[in-house]
Length: 125
Ligand code: HEC
Ligand code: HEC
Ligand code: HEC
Image 1 (cartoon, rainbow, N blue to C red):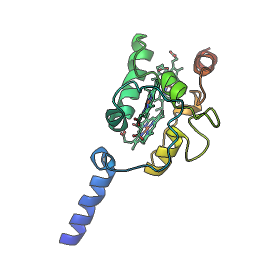
Image 2: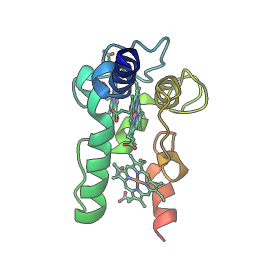
Image 3: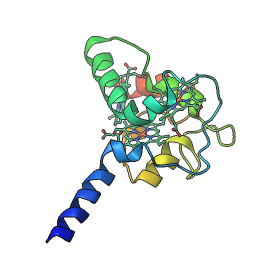
Image 4: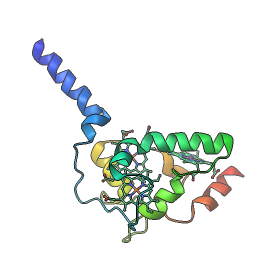
């Protein structure tokens, strides 16, 4: 029984963001470079919540801000295929595949630089 409990505890730890801080993702293509919108370590742990919050305040209050998805894509698109998706080296897909996270954001948002606004204008019509 003891053993089962500690195994479950280890699983719970693995599923939490805290455990993720120590995970090193091999060979991730960060994209075009520059300085991230916040400290990369902070971003690694918090970008999901930041994006969800940015979405809420942009869509409901029209406030555009620091954590715009369009900005992430502009910087993090690979120089190889100009996208954040496509292979397991591409920035968003690569880490999510590794960490087994699934997001549906790119069904609507462009995964390539500078076409996000056009894409969303089409959807919003
Ligand atoms: C270094 C690894 C890593 C990279 C790079 C990364 N993610 Fe994530 N992402 C995660 C992990 C792990 C989670 C789940 C834990 C969390 O929410 O922090 C997550 C969660 C998310 C969530 C929240 C999903 C939900 O249902 O709450 C969104 C949205 C997201 N990521 C978007 C992105 C986008 C967009 C990019 C590319 C610009 C990206 N991520 C790059 C690791 C990464
Ligand atoms: C069904 C289509 C759809 C899906 C799926 C979707 N979005 Fe959006 N999103 C929109 C539309 C439409 C807007 C409003 C367009 C605008 O005001 O620029 C928007 C706006 C946003 C914004 C504010 C504008 C910007 O560029 O930052 C963020 C952030 C955002 N979404 C993040 C996400 C994330 C993260 C996911 C996945 C968890 C997601 N969206 C999934 C349609 C979608
Ligand atoms: C001006 C360019 C730029 C913008 C805009 C930008 N980033 Fe970054 N980001 C970077 C660079 C470069 C790194 C790598 C820095 C390093 O490792 O020292 C990075 C690191 C990260 C990391 C950590 C990756 C890891 O392996 O630990 C995450 C997660 C991240 N960014 C997500 C985002 C998200 C989400 C957005 C949009 C809200 C965004 N970034 C906007 C340039 C950018």
